[in-house]
Length: 225
Image 1 (spheres, rainbow, N blue to C red):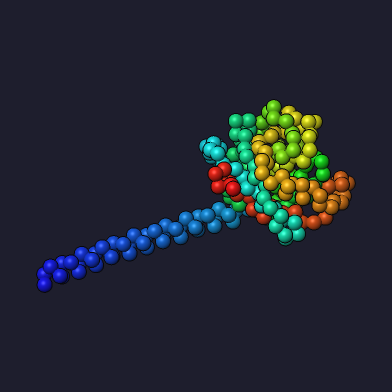
Image 2 (image 1 turned 180 degrees about the vertical axis):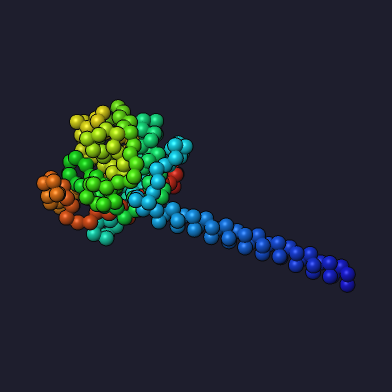
């Protein structure tokens, strides 16, 4: 009888320990989920500048999912060039990993030149509460290149970036190249064919449909099929 009681007690202890471990795992998962949800809810206006030690190395890529008038059209996948523009890569990844690019439009489209997005105001005037100094480099502005938009001040980059649609050598050495779309150029081709009208400044570049980055995620290159 004593051995039966001892065995039953041991089984109970093991079960209780497993249950505690299971609950702890569940609590951990809930905690991590809450952290992710909190990160994703940060808007561009709320987001603070990246810390100087925010990592930029590693073989990660950006997956930019796009919709036109609410209809998903696919994804553009871009690699980064941290050796040429360390802080611009850090800046883009920081914004993307906090979900602050999600839902933002490509507000400027010029076929044969580029598409521009990343402005929370949606009209080319907005951005975060910090600036990124220029990191001009030797990488040419060819189709698929990711480069950072700025004002007349070379050191005024914020969150707005553009994807080059055609050879644009006149931008070389004047705008910071920090990556390139290597997959999903057909998505770029669809975007540049969206009808445009005059912008507030009179430029024929204002899309007549809502072209939106539904999400911008940073993932390992190995996760891209």
